[in-house]
Length: 91
Image (cartoon, rainbow, N blue to C red; front, top):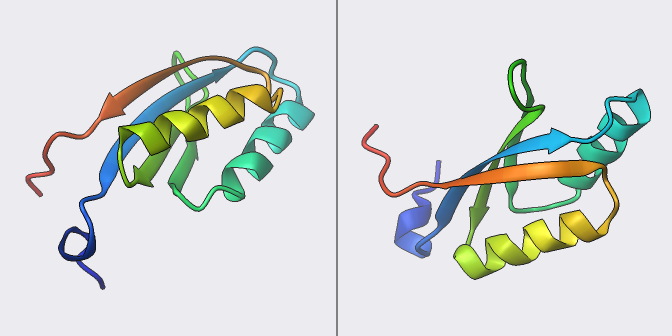
């Protein structure tokens, strides 16, 4: 297991993503797009107030924002997203 912090200073961001439509093909398109992004480390379809919890590991906030903007331009039925930037991971 590599300690990425010794190689670079990665930025971890958790993002809640809500789709505007809940058709099977919308979920499939979003998941396929997420699979194609190297910086996506985890994708979880969850219950509750949003559809997906996605973990990104990027070189910084600018890279994360570029990835989000690219996702929004792909017409993946993303209605809204909320980003949570990890400041510290004590465990």
